[in-house]
Image 1 (spheres, rainbow, N blue to C red):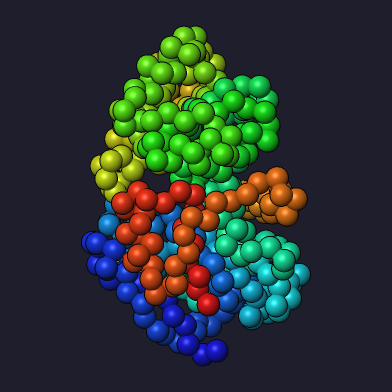
Image 2 (image 1 turned 90 degrees about the vertical axis):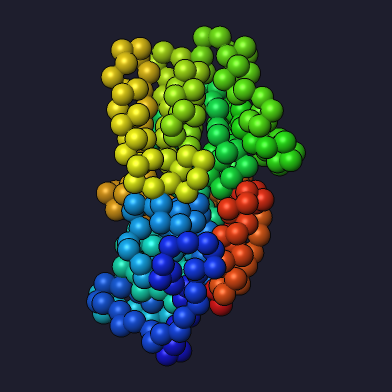
Length: 336
């Protein structure tokens, strides 16, 4: 164990820019832990980073990946409370999880039972933590309310639906027609955004508005979504990907758009969620909520959909699948 395999992006472009490289294992700091990664999550932020459209990513060379599950291989001198061989899951706020080994501060690690599939546990981190934050922290949704979820078959969208249904919330979700069966199976009423105007559908059903909506797209989609929410309701924006691969301009326009909507005196509000910042800002919330989600998984109350698994060296194939929109739920890299 003196060599690491990781995926590195040296220049932005097509999925083929994801290159596997070998390098020596890094030295761990006193408060860090060396984790052997079994499963790393693939998110749309990783695709945006590959394309050069993710402002929060470091400049190349960079290694994508926010979420992982693995086993502790080494402990720093002050990393107490953990043991070699423990199964742990976590979020790396600086990316870097497309790798066989990862050095990460102990505060970002949460233990999980060995009998759980690392791919399912990994799926909780970026997707379900984001869903939990925007559902309960940002929108303060209550039982019996009605919400609209965009990209309902995606990782965060499917997590939103499952968590909302646990609280007896009525959910409508936009998705392409070939994904409707999946959206229905997890508890939402699907709307085909390609052949139907979701604004007209929801306005006809709820002329006085719905309680909340969740939008990862931004721009005109966010403004249409805002019009559907009743007075006192909330729209949560958790991405500004638009119809391409993000970028500084869509992000700036997105933040400006949110600000302009929030000054309209109609009793509505738009909130923004960026999970890595939330994790760094409130570590206690992160650890407690992730532990709670692991318990829900262990009890069979939520079931992350792992739509595809790829080897670490096949990361480019995972990104190709993300770009062509063929996946439902979470894509996972099996790193060992």
